Length: 222
Image (cartoon, rainbow, N blue to C red; front, side):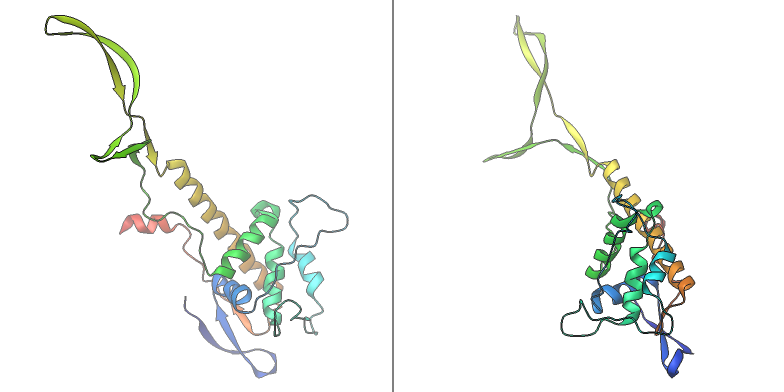
């Protein structure tokens, strides 16, 4: 993930670093060790409540003052821009996943990861169970019925066997993973727009760069 530097200066003559939103999140949570704070409003107890950006900015903002950082970062100061980013993530609304999505965004950024959308996954028909012995590996079979057959002039009853199969990975599993990626991507878009609208970052400039919206579509075209 590349970090670009724009020609431009923040207040006090400092050059602003231009980062895509994913890079900015990883800087805030992974490098600066910013903490995600989700204090419930006094009049709301619903666990799924998402804070509006206005609420977040009111909690953080007197624009001329520094944000008091460093209370969470062991052995140092947490950059004020990192705390603004963390506060904005805390404001992800219910329509985009609320608190659960905020935690997911922060955890992925802290680990430097992108959600697993199961690249290259193709459902394959496989036996439900395999048995192994000294002769090797074979699919487990079950009895699904009986038939009468004529063998050497005699009627005999024989079992009809079938091999139960399933699809692995299941199509629903792949679809669920990709919905999760799309939800995360939409949350990142909201965070990027919120940081741009808030105008509170002093040394970081969040650009319009975003992760690929549907990377599996790009993979299919190759």
